[in-house]
Amino acid sequence: MAGITKAMSKFRLAVVQLHVSKVKADNLNRAKRLIKEASGQGATVVVLPECFNSPYGTGFFPEYAEKIPGESSQVLSEAAKENEIFLVGGSIPEEDQGKLYNTCSVFGPDGSLLVKHRKIHLFDIDVPGKIRFQESETLSPGSCLSMFDTPFCKVGVGICYDIRFAELAQIYAKKGCQLLVYPGAFNMTTGPAHWELLQRGRAVDNQVYVATASPARDETASYIAWGHSTVVSPWGEVITKAGATEEVVYADIDLQYLADVRQQIPITAQKRTDLYSVNTVQDG
Image (cartoon, rainbow, N blue to C red; front, side, top):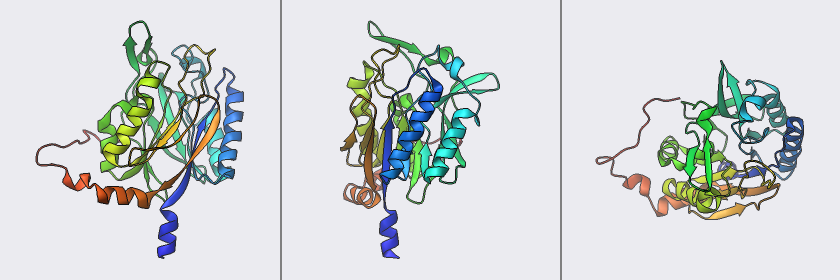
């Protein structure tokens, strides 16, 4: 039994940094190929990037939007089942009852839909002289937290801008998540400044693993993603990191190591809940 428990405390995570084009069919086919490649390298959990099936931009969201279930989610379901993996399907523009959402669907090894996370915090920023982007011009925000269980650990899901909100990560950790995944497309302004910093912050504050999946950088795109998909340990160390181009990176997640970190620096037990707390207003 001890051997089984030890085996279940480790698993391989793959992050797919996909090159995204304007041709949806090409994006889906490329995603299928790289998912299979990741599975062949022993990954049992695979993460795709934000907007993996379409270019990222408010002008593209209405054109590429789909229902869920729909074409892209069907491809993800089949890929998860074929490769017998947990598949965090990045995100796609989702249409539902006349509204558009930035949505991540997660599928189990049997192809079933485990959870659907609609981006909670919309990316509305204005950095003078560098970048202005307003997701709220076309998208609506989600209103639910999103977690799913695996035989290894519970996983919390956010999308891109969600990572800037420490409370979300704190609540996921409080609810037992040991891995947080954020498909995201930071840009050439926010990427070099905050991408790795935020991941390391969320990881060390909550003593969890954090994984981010970015689209590959395309200098010809109207919105240029930073790339550098990353996995960070509960100690705040970067344990794997992609470059700017399309590739798959891997991390061996060790939940015993996570437990050791929490024992060595027991911040969860030391929280002053008599003075402060972070709680949900509503459970999704």
